[in-house]
Length: 171
Image 1: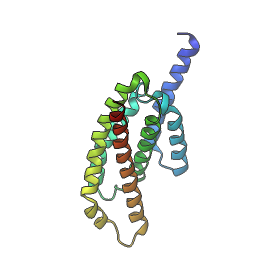
Image 2: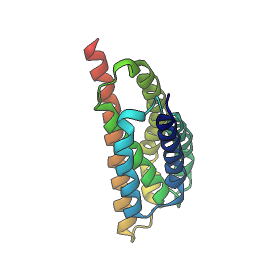
Image 3: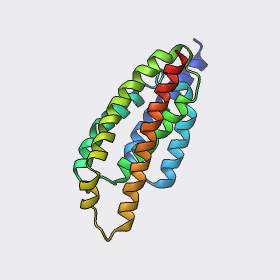
Image 4: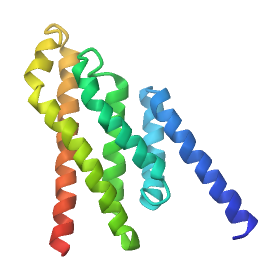
């Protein structure tokens, strides 16, 4: 490996690490769109093989989403909403690419993430009535954000299931 490749690899590692710290730190809508655009570029080639830290980030955060749902005040926080958005982007972009030799690794990660997301999704829908009841009836924007989050969660879940079906159809 030559010096240029070493510097390039080091730069990529630093960018990927910085992105993870920015995900929780900044929730500004415009800034988050830019971060998600960067993930659209990085994900097809780096996730999950060269970006295991992103896998761990998703695993850790999905375990925490169910806990976030228990605190109705935090349910619609930008952090939760933006995390789900970024997760959807990464999985959608990555699943559209040819997996080649990384197929087994991707699907191992895929099934772990599916299991964690299923826990969030199941709890979310099982507690919808309680959650909506806890929202302020006069705050239409909160209810609207809840519905958007529910739709986004449903799309992710359906996307997960469809990716799994594609894999089974190929076999």
